[in-house]
Length: 271
Image (cartoon, rainbow, N blue to C red):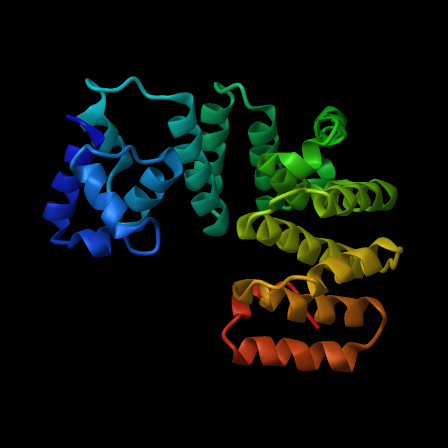
């Protein structure tokens, strides 16, 4: 069975229209052509559709295994989504299972992300072995790796608690300098950097430090123009106010964010 045929079978089983099946993920017209086997669907979009409609991944791939040899990209996309879901739901057991699966892939950055994620969930960031921390540092210190590799950016975002103040400031400065020079940046790229900026301001507040990189970070967030990223401007203002000791202004911004329905984005900022 081909992918399009398997997707159509699942869609009909769920009683969904083509538009509902593709909604929020890919263009419905394009999706319709995927079902007709006139277009190929990307691995990331495929995995998102499967997770969005709670389609059993193993059963789905079992349907198409005789037609396709599972690609490394598809495996990684599936694992990344599984890791994200497990991390957000604090499912440590699944995270450990993902680590075993990731260890079989040739992707050291993804493996380190899972290790750091497990350490965070188990509140053992400061207990990571020195060799793991050194490996994280080495991966991030490669030429242009931090600005050009999405997985590297995610690794840095997740690994902030394991770095010294100096290392954290160094990597953040390097990321911002290189991010400004990236040509033809996508909105998704800017969003990933904005998430990192928010985490960095939070780390600086927690560590009670205010290096010049805070201003660089704030400036990047203030220059965001895409409508759905404007929330990061408010987060940037809140973080900067806290770092500078303006708690009342920060609380006012947090209250506004809560009122707008962004509780999840400010839940760690215990003001």
